Image (cartoon, rainbow, N blue to C red; front, side):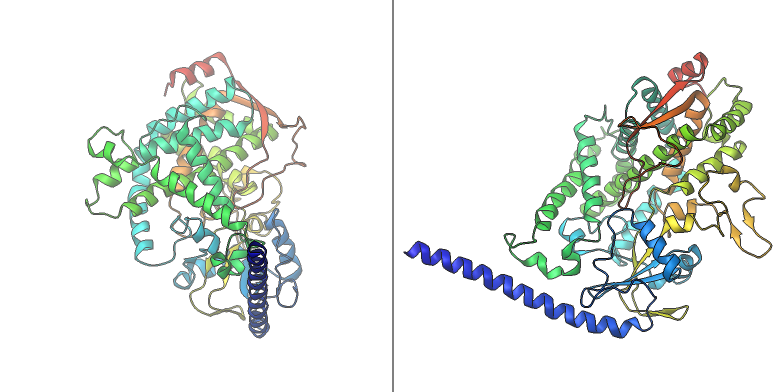
Length: 518
């Protein structure tokens, strides 16, 4: 009898909690709806939404950039949506992004650190930190240890790892991205921590790879706790609380990615290999914040991994599809090297078509089709629109790169668009074919750009000098053409897994890869 009474009490208690939570949500939604209706009068136009919840049901979770581009064509270049009281503005033109993020940077420097991100332990990750002392310390160290002059000292390691990667692509046919993930892991773990990963089965590679997937998962904007942060304090057994387990798992992965590669004792006794970790710890006071150091080192890896994997994947796929572009770049390289040596970074100024090819890869299919969201610190007015304090701003990089006024014939792969006089200012004063580096690597200070730029260029130059790339197929055997290219969704966009034929251009080319002759 007592047990039955207790069981009934437990059920009643659960019903009371669920009822109370429902009431709180309804009251909160009503308040947000009233506030949103008042603010909407001067807010940018967008899809109409529904009472109380606004545009919650309109927000896409697959290839979001295409949906936002469609909204822009219907409602205008600046699109406004409301999600249960949260104001979101989608910027589809580069001029508007620059006007707010650059010209008014003081009001748009904060980042969107959501409840899910904080629960998952990623709130101090690069791109999530808001302006403050920690933010400034983070940026100061990143600037010091990821500047262009520092990256030049890593060229030898970059050349060694990219040469090994090309050899693997030739002799270990299979999913291209598996080898590119190995390249990224080996290079970044070595440069960041002085750790030499043997292969994709290396435990250190596992920790970092899983952590990166965890970060990207928690960055999704559609977690219910982001709309109703108070839900994080409710019991896990309530319906709809599945996000709490995801957050707990992600926090564990975050901690592992910070702690596992970090071996301060090894560095202290002088046995560590040259690395960013060694440089950071050797140049900081002994009482420096260890958490900050670990966060900086982790950022060096995480901030670069997705860019390297995505950009090199899109490059190899593009070369398999556009053989005329591949031949043009190979001819330019051969004229410089006579096919007797591998190209190096010193050759870059003499290879303008290759540089234009690099830019077109960044534009054609951007790795980040949606930029990192920014948040306004104060209310602002722009082009007659009023943005409430705390508005979230999302740059639609896909729309920017496919704007026919800025990039004529945007859906065709045309490296020559970045060769003068095609690139520059028109007679009407419109800048066309702007260098996509300034957009693809994000708006702002773009730490990590120099390393990503150097690694991708080195791989591109060396694989074109030594190999022919053709016959791209999805892993299900379907041939890939320019008309059926497909990509992943989410914050980072890569081609769907694919294979292709990569063969040495000659016996001498294969010898160069083995010997690494410069």
